[in-house]
Length: 188
Image 1 (tube, helix red, strand yellow):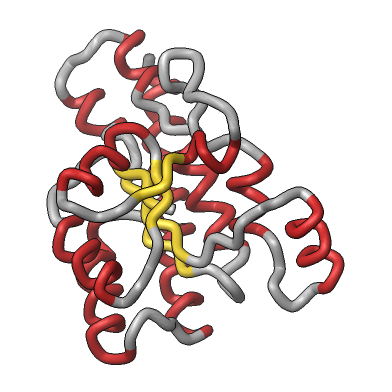
Image 2 (cartoon, rainbow, N blue to C red):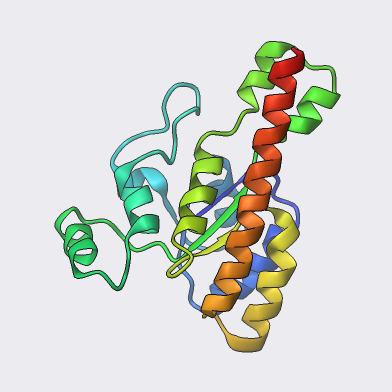
């Protein structure tokens, strides 16, 4: 699952993931970017049977996406429910959040700032980090190089320790993001 605001630096990671046989699932602009590089990419809407709604405010917030991330691969009941509801296992989540702090710093209107509060992205980060036993979460473009280094060394498989490292970074990104939003609300 790849859903990013900034696309810079993503092409090299996508090239290596594609070479390793990783299948891509993505949203609107990111999906178009992936396809523009010549890679196949499944639209989130294909999995959810539901379009992006409310002006793009709701794209990934769906049980088939979050079930695919949060499903515990070692728990038979989770696997059975994933099969029952045709939920695909999602083993890698790559996210780059809306630029909330940059938007605030630009002097944008309160309305524009509110629209840069990422909901789906932060939820994807938290879900991927929570299920680090089964999912690698890349919570910002700052981690692209780290994942690329691991893939170059060992292929498209991550270790539990590596996934825990990414989860730790993910909760750091989440904490920083929420702190910035909290601060803006306190001072707005």
